[in-house]
Amino acid sequence: ARDTAGARRLGQRYGPAMGETDQAAAFALLTDDDARAGSARFSDLATRIASIDTLEAFIEPFRDRFNNGGGPS
Image 1 (cartoon, rainbow, N blue to C red):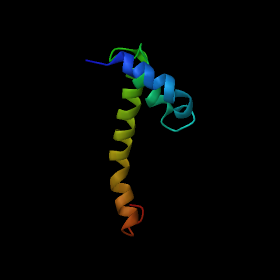
Image 2 (cartoon, rainbow, N blue to C red):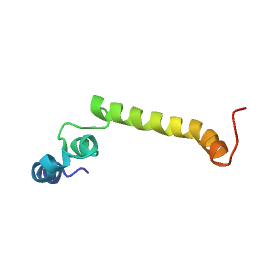
Image 3 (cartoon, rainbow, N blue to C red):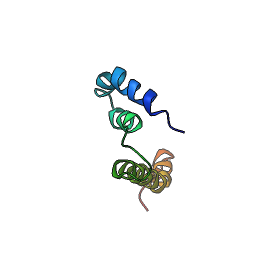
Image 4 (cartoon, one colour):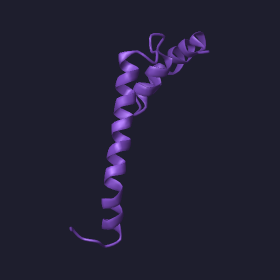
């Protein structure tokens, strides 16, 4: 079960400092009382993460070939 009271306290205590970091969106998602698996914010974040993984998987063979001295095919 999610500890919403604890998450709220974390958000109140560290939210302003975390808001200045690259992890601000993820921290806000984790400490937001309204963030649930079915929420738009959670779904958007999950989609963005999946697209990054897909892009990384696509680019990896090209990166390996480039790093090993291979040129364009």
